[in-house]
Length: 387
Figure 1 (cartoon, rainbow, N blue to C red):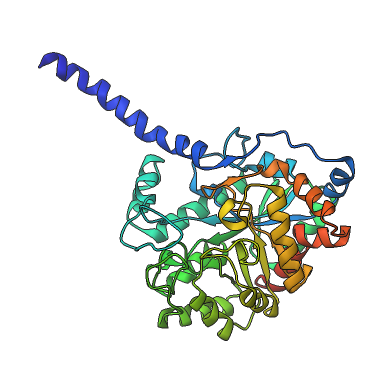
Figure 2 (cartoon, helix red, strand yellow; figure 1 turned 30 degrees about the vertical axis):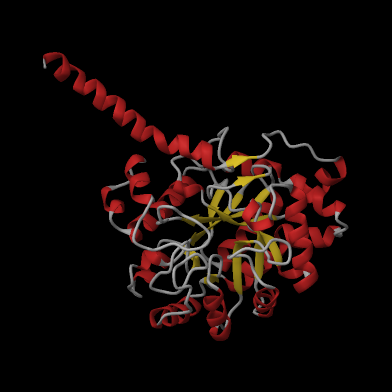
């Protein structure tokens, strides 16, 4: 008995070590690349790439315990790798709930993987039981990283912020603009007034759903896959009044239809595939591609296999070409889903390979500049809240 009692602290310490070390192991395993860096590119592609304003519409790095300001040899992005890839603007999304047994076809809303992850990463206790607090905590992580970055990571809240950033970037591109997004509006916890708290915390893009139906509407991966709820209709009106962009990634087909019918401002899909090159429950139909474009919005093409049906630059370029042919180059953008538990061809430092792929596919330099970031720049300058 005495030996057992003496061993208890050791066993407890070992158990704690495994529990608290698990997030890093999961991060390494679930956010992987097909090919490790460095990523070669031709001189012509590199020369073009180094002059581009590159924008990516979706990165889940805030979910993990990595320091955004330090380079890591795992995961897909951090500030050093974003700078190496010449990224000028990154949308950072907050993930607050995912169902156990997560799949693309059908998920209930009555389970959650993030609770244990929050505990293991030593998030504040209030985040263990509140989806709103999880979103606010991740927003705080981004603000703290920006404050400690010596001006290399700049949080964007208004058109004026973004205009000033672009001017500074043109003088010195060793900086990244950060825009904050919510992956699903379940952090509202069913209360419209919580939208004010998200706005005040810096959120400027709102995904409506994630992997399950919520109080706002149906998910492409939910049980009912319905359209806007009565609360959802109020939320859409409030989002537009506050000049917050609506993101239809993960939305059910009925939800996309309902939002297209009532929206007055440009819409976006931050990270997706298209049915024309890769059939799937969350990939956009031609009809929905045209609807997003007609709103004045953009579609961010993802990099992972369920989005483009392969893990390759060629598959990403094929989806971009198909989308451009359907709706015009001016409505196509990048939506990597970096750090979203996906396997991608490269990490953020390897984006010149995508520039090279677009050149090889016959896109002009002006078209490549639009796809790689010009379209997102135009959308945000027109759609972010005024100062």
